[in-house]
Image (tube, rainbow, N blue to C red; front, side, top):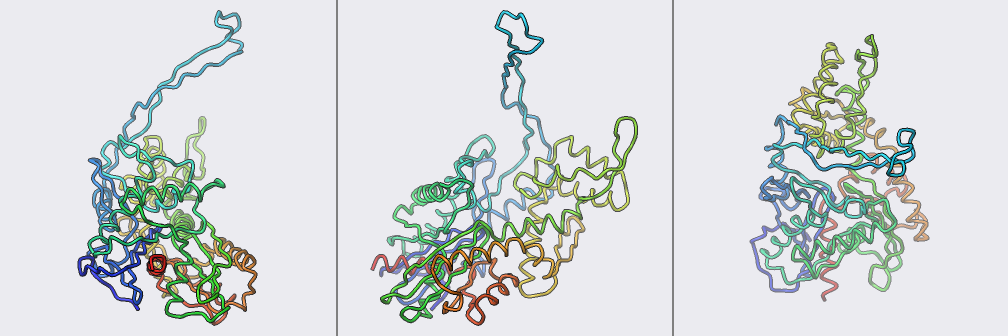
Length: 477
């Protein structure tokens, strides 16, 4: 049913369904002609049908997407010495009334003071890399992001990636179809209208990318559609789609009814592989960067041994795109003082200094991701960052322990969707497991314990695009 094609390889004039999976971590595009699914090559590499969902904006406003974006960011930033400059961003005027100092003043007893406001900026920053933009789509509090001297709407950060996929579709001669673009059951966001906000932004981004006739389609239903196209249910049978990706876990229960798939229930929670990576960083890498190290610090007129204030670094390390902000003088001075301790504490803080000055936090995340993926097939792996002389062992048991809170949420989500569908676990005919995070051994064990003998892995990185293409074809037929 599946074969890989190069974008320029053909121009098919027949009706084609188009599926666009704009994922948190990776994206893909599929075409369907009523008989078979084909995947467009989005990258000039052997596995180019899966493209990292990445955007790089250079200081001169040139954009790169996919692997080229990551390569450009790594080449331009890794190992670069960061120098922050205090930049005046405005002034704040504060008026205080009714103080002891203001009694008897002609203005009615108020004191007004003005203060200049400065921010530390990286004047030599060559470009910004954006990953997981999909996670911002439903956030009402994140409307614009400052990139150098301009402010970009979240819509503008999603558009170039979608435009690259639209260009590949047009090059394949399939530009006339009406594509289906994937969407999670529940977008991330802290407000009740997160889904509404995200759908509006995604619809606008599709329009700007030249995909104005696109329709948003639920991702877990797409995953079930692509699997069941080759493995159909009998009338009345039900299936569960379990789509665990980089940003969200999406679940749908579907039933074969009248020869068509009917949705019985859906549910989604904002957990995924990105959060697991952050928890690995915190649990296993932070101690190697100085968390918990004891250092001597001046307190009044004596030196006292106290824990190094690692909490002042933690959030920026986890938010790698803003890690350059750790080059502020007062933080670097803390590091230099800590490094003077020597011994194990000093060596660990020297490593943190190298992360900060060399802008290596994203490099650490890449190493964590590689080690995590290796544990899908092995019991032991290592988080290796050669630039830091860092080798942190990680076992399957470590990963299970770190991911346990998220797996508890996943188990609760399974209960919710099955209750909503009114289906007992033993009544499901098949559980379709897809998405990169669904390959974790703990996830597989969770599903096998609930649905023994009925769990199947289905194209973790391309199943959604395939199902979207089939849905697009059916809507046009």
